[in-house]
Length: 88
Image (cartoon, rainbow, N blue to C red):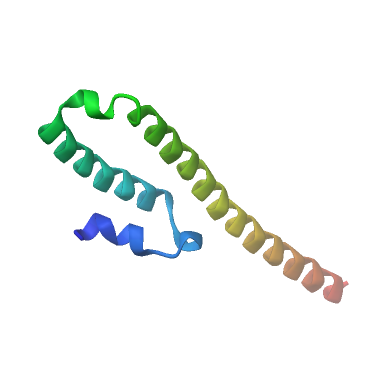
């Protein structure tokens, strides 16, 4: 597998939006091989579905990253509140 293919080996919980783009690129290369061999018609029905799944994956991965950042910020806010309470 090439460099982009390493994203496919990652734990799903560790995926980033960039990994989704890398996965899309790897899949695109494979689809090009199929098109070269069998023609565009061979992928006409599946391609919109694959694109939609990749779009959904991108959103879910993005939300997961935001959730982790949100949790980190929430913990920092709690720490600051405790610190302020101790000072008062």
